[in-house]
Length: 390
Image (cartoon, rainbow, N blue to C red; front, side):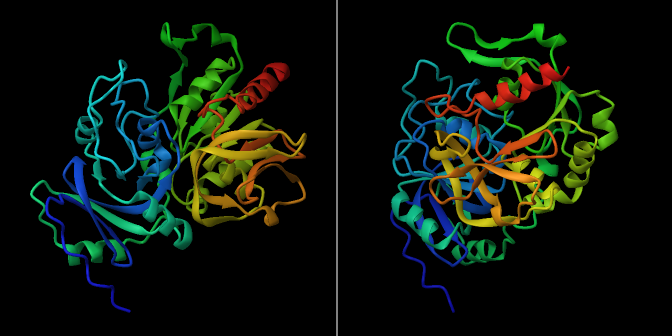
């Protein structure tokens, strides 16, 4: 069926979001000029837009922020999860205002422009979010041109022709390309990020970078670990040559089944070697795949800083941060794996633990600290266990 005719371009429109079904949404551009194609998702967090955009798990995605005021506290050098933004762009309701924070070093619009990321404001983000929630995360094109010149039919073809995230191994594309050590801990008001040189004698964690967030590394260090990061395609022999006490499997973008083609055999070998493993997000999904479970694409995914998760062992509820569009199918877990956490939004699997190996994982982000630090105990559980075993 042919797409409905595009609405006439409003006067002053300098940006447009075009969806794969042909829908055209006009607005005002900010950040960089250009065109980008990816999956359009939404994030419900009220704070942390800079951390969200720099999270490597958002590679290949255009983020709709449901909170209307984005960019109002500017940007700085501290609130980033990687060296540069990975999201392709963002969709917001209100125009970006000048920074109103003593910590800001650059307006958000300038930060977006410096990193080549496209923004569109003036969009009814509530309507767009409802569309995604009901129909699933669509592919789309975001475009910004200061004089408002757009080839809408061409953008519609681009949106409709993009293959989508299923089948994409983006982790290999954005991962680090060489090993490096990490000794930076958590941020403090008085001294910024603390260095932990004293961890040299602590348990050695080798963290596999499938799209690693820096705050995960900081929490591992804060828990007492000596951390070495290795690329996503590091082999079993390369990891074991570092003499790890434990292995961490990081978050990351794309389809876990595609990344699993090269990652799962390595994880299986590490499990067979008896190495303790801890995984977060994509790392959780890869651990599930390694023990024979299946991953599936979710309709709209979970992205935000207000997701309640039930801990099955004691019934306690953690308020968590999430960012994932795939999930491990609980019904495919083997007898040697048990569910430890579930999402209270939809009952999907939010954590698992192996009963025959020292390995566990969670789908959410315990390092993100959305208000209370409900889930920091997981880093202490992992690193503390390594210390006892050493």
